[in-house]
Length: 316
Image 1 (tube, rainbow, N blue to C red):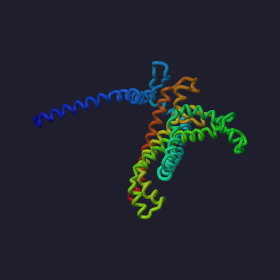
Image 2: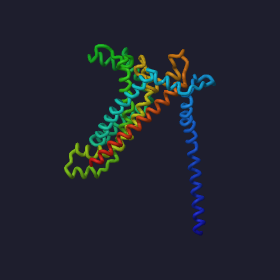
Image 3: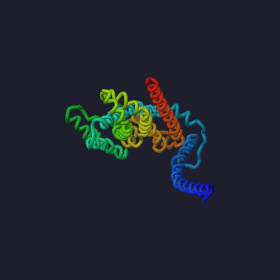
Image 4: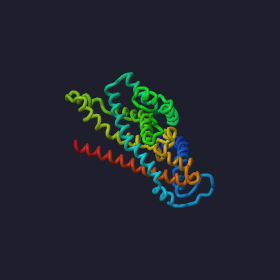
C-alpha cells in the first residue's frame, strides 16, 4: 500500500473516531444547555423584567430591579451573612481540615486512619435537607439530646435555643454546615498530600531536618498551588448552603440566618411582602448580582494566593 493510501486510511479512521467521540458528547451538551446555559441566560433576561412567574406577560423594567436591590436592607443583610460563611467559615474549615489531613497522612496510619477518614466523610454523603431536619430535633430546646445534656450536666442553666435565638441561629448554621462538609475539604488535602514526593522527606531526614522543618520547608510549599483550588472550592460550597439552612431555620428567626440563596428563594417562591406575590424578576436580579459578586470573590482569592506563592518563590 502506498504512503498516500495509508495516510488516507488513517484520516478516515481518525474521522470515524472523532464521529463517535462527538456523538457521545452531544447528549451531555444538550442536557447542559437545557439545565445550565439556558437557565443562566433566562435569569439575566428575567432580571430585567417585572414578572410573578404565573402570567405570560412580562413587563420590561430595565435596571429597575437592580436599583431596588441595592437599596434593600434585607438583601444586604443576607449578603453579609453569606460573606460570614466565606470569611469565617472557609478559613476555619480549610485550616482544620489541613491540620487533620497532615495528622492522618503522617502520624495516624493504617486502619485507624481509614476509620477516621470514613467517619469524617460520612456526613458529606448524606443529603443536606435530611441532616437539617434531623438536627432540628437534635438541637430542640424542649426535648433535644443536646439541651438535655447541657442542662443535666450543669453546663447551662436553661435549654439553649441554637436555632431559634437570633444571636445563635447563624453561628449554629455555620457550625453545622462546616461539620457536614468538613470531610470533602479533608479529602482534598489528603489527595494533595499524596503529591509530595517521598524522596524529599528522605533527603531532609538525612540532612537532620525535624518534623516541623519538613512541614514548613517541604509540605506546605508543595501544597500552596493546591490551596488555591481548595479554598475556591470551599468558598463556593459555603456560598451554597441553601438546603441546610432552609431545613434548619428557613432563614429565621427574624431573617437572622437568611443568606442570599434563602433570600432569593423567599422572594421568588415564598414572598412575605408585596401582598404575597412572587417576584421572579426581582429574585433573578438578586441571583445575577450575587453570581457576579461570588465570581469576583473567587478571582480575588485566586489572585491573592497566586501572589503569595510567587512571593515565596522569589524569597527562595
